[in-house]
Amino acid sequence: MIAEAVRALREELKAGNCFGEPVTLVAAVKTRTREEIEEAVRAGVSAIGDNRVQEFREKSIYVPGVTRHFIGHLQTNKVKYLVGEVDLIHALDRDELLDALAARAEARETVQEVLIQINIGNEATKGGYPLREGLAAFGRARKNYIRPVGFMAMLPAEGDPAALASLCDDMRALYDRARAEFPDVRFLSLGMSGDWRLCVAHGSNMIRLGTAIFGARPAPAQ
Image (cartoon, rainbow, N blue to C red; front, top):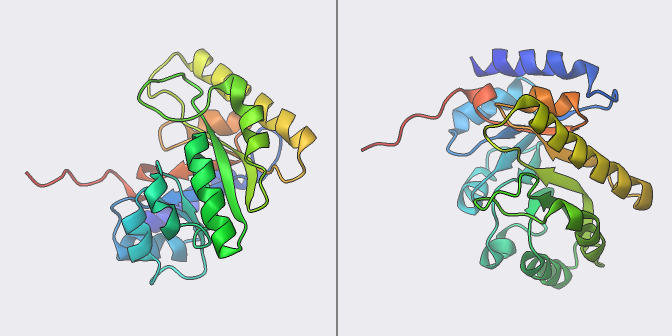
């Protein structure tokens, strides 16, 4: 049951992360139905995250009262649908996207909050800035209409637990360096259904969970 999963997660997260900081639970709602999402919200989910722009737009009419996040890869030609409409964009992963977001935000005269995506595992299949460029990317993103408020990353799907923990520690160190320099820093979005406990144990304060809330997605029709 979705409600039972949400209640169990919220209970487990009461203690916060390893620093005692509150952990924001974002429900990843890719392909999920209206009924599934509404059940999660009734059970206490207060933030939902979409991976696809079209799904975000379709769901906007029936999920009032929750914080809306966009957690997927974002094409520059789709920013017009999100800027000023979504509370937080997680995946600012390249300067080209930064320029597109800033232009749209200025045109709308709105301030868009974003997270800087870091390719923490240096994986060719994932976007994001290298760890060593994270602080510089954060600084570049501090334009008049763009407000970076932290970082996002995805751990490699497989790896030695100690190595994955070390990557988490690297992300937390980057987050702490940025927080010491910039007053708006407040989120480290790190952790998905398969690794969120490890991430929270090493300093993440925002996790993006789909399967852990809703169960496995149905296999696509043949």
